[in-house]
Length: 433
Image 1: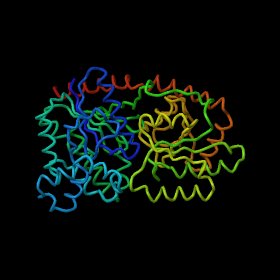
Image 2: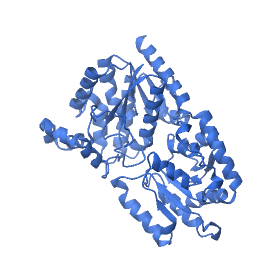
Image 3: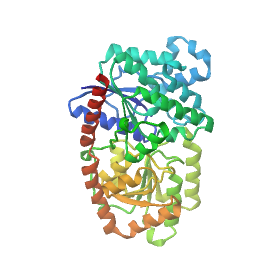
Image 4: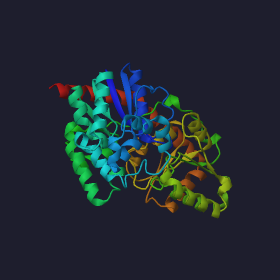
């Protein structure tokens, strides 16, 4: 089967769970001998996307569409201006600045993108569709998330193929908008959902969330959990590691880095934990600069700067080095998540997780048995859960081994890819009937 994945890029400046999810599915589908093309939008994909052909352009370049939305003059700019703004070096640079992953201030842009051929980016949509018609012959087109629904009608009609769409963390983007815009966006997404054959939520929890928010008929929802290949990770018994606590995600307020730091400060008041360190990784954007400065200041105020490591590399080898350094991980996301692929990466590496009872975290931990759930999501409660594992090495070892086995049993990417193929087949049958 020929499959096209339309994937928004992150530019590689931070740990992007959605980018990793899509990349791992593409790899697994190719192992099943299917042809898969990755089509990047907004920003280049993760820096480890070595197989991404330089001949495939980045559509809807983030700088270009932003300027055209705010300043109509740019809509009449000559082609060389667009090409310069959409060059990979410029887009990689843009990913490091504030606003590249922030919904506030981009409400009009979001609405315009969802309007598709009726929006301000209609020329870019036409360019994308024309390029696909000329260069590809997909049997199915897979949109990475529902914020791309404005593409669905044109892609489906011009290519005469089914369009499917993953669902993951769209609410994180939409629900922070001002109330009037938020309501309009959800209504527009609900209307545009008619252009998609099947929606693929990444967890049963998130299927329920989006069924309510977008009024999606139950028969159009088919959950497929995120998966990883356990062979990509190195298991090391936690009994052979230092008692370090880790954090692996974008280092932001939304992801609760400050909650973990405050929990660590509380732990360090106990002399039993003098040897315990904190290792943080995941990168950041310009929006996180002030927040991170405040976090570093708080660490210094408590004299813990020598016991907190900011681990710079979070891709491939750098991530493996991180997992070797930590015996447990916590990412205390304030509002939970639709899934959280980092949980699987941790557990496949033998690292138990300690997560708040929010979003899909309880669903994942229950299936794997590879961690603890705590509530409410406050530093003192988190500190108590971390303390329990720091004292009980046998329990930590049990969770480590259970998590690894749970990932292999329930979240192996090959199993999830087979389920994805079943959904593609069903979408094609629905399209032809």
